[in-house]
Length: 294
Length: 253
Image (tube, rainbow over the protein chains, first blue to last red):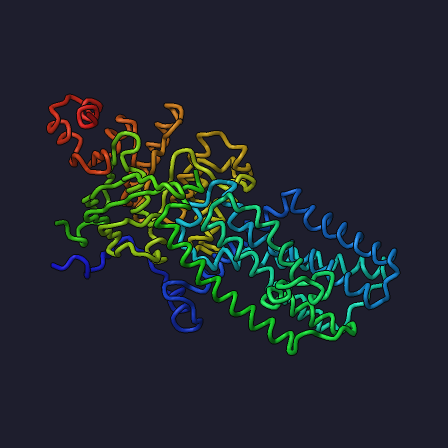
């Protein structure tokens, strides 16, 4: 008998007929996964990150302290330099973006780091989870925290510095752009950790800052020394910032900023998910997940 | 050669080497060609000295490690480069010195893992409740993991390993570092799990008493190779020993 071709069927194997109906008839979900199970796995990471955020004093500081301090510093400096209304709006947009981006991407990066710090990563990946479950599940909490930071910083900017948001719809798109950029940065951090282990965990806090420096967070990118403007043109956040700042009367350096930003985002997310899948396959070969649990 | 339909785990010439060092590579040969078959419903023990390859083999069975050479079939499916989600839902693992998210309570930890295994709403609630009851963790349900005693941490590890009602349960030194009375309780729980749920258990241990009490068949592994395989009596007969400890020392030489 060919023992490779005959699947083992255990009598204790359980099947839930209603879930099978859901997965095969109504909802197109990956083979072997039901709709509830797919959502449940996203939700598992959302649930865990939310509890961590709720109980962790640092998480509270990340939302309230650093973004507000950053905004006030920039705003007061703007007043001291007697910036015009639209120039002040330019730098305040940068300060708000910096706060929201950092908080949102941290949650995606934390999806792996929480497991590494508690040395429970092997239990997480022993479970039937895909690499996108933990990324997307954590991103949901990141967006929730990012939204709180955004509301808070916009409110402070309005009250303290007379900052006025442009069209609501444009703000919504810009916020979506920041969230997507945070997803990319968080995924990049996760990829680096999967490849090089805990020694690169510092990228969770530094990578976003570095990218913000290049994509012209407080200045137009043509003020950057060569070849940084070229590097900036490869970062989606550059285009989202430019799209939003155009509403304050700044002429854009690139045409179709929003579209270019979105296309770059989709390409990077696709590539990063592929790389993460390969990194997880490599991790099973090298045993890095098990080493990170010791 | 064992047929995959008769056994839940079959390995064929499994080899695994770990490398370390960036420039000057150092190689550790963890497994040097393991052939093994585990029957459905049995408690199979892996014994061997430190560094013999027990945990590596268990991690390969559970799909957390890929072998460099050879083949592994678990529940009829071959372990390949990309982990099969379908197989993972049917396995679980518990190890000695467990670690879980420290600021989550016992109940939250179980809920988190139940969700990871695809249990939702009522199934999740019911399974978490059952596990809390079965592993006598009800009074600690609101206790954070970091505040649990070592024994209760191990009970939580077993409860987590049972959250998806696995068909195969891997136990990596489940009573490591526990007091004798708690270790006894854990062994009773393992037997209870097996008897009530017909789950196949593969366990590694350094305690001969544990292997004697629990295992129906034992594989003795040394230097990444299975040196002996059989029931406790067969191993003792093979080594002309009067107990398992003597057999272990004989085989380890």
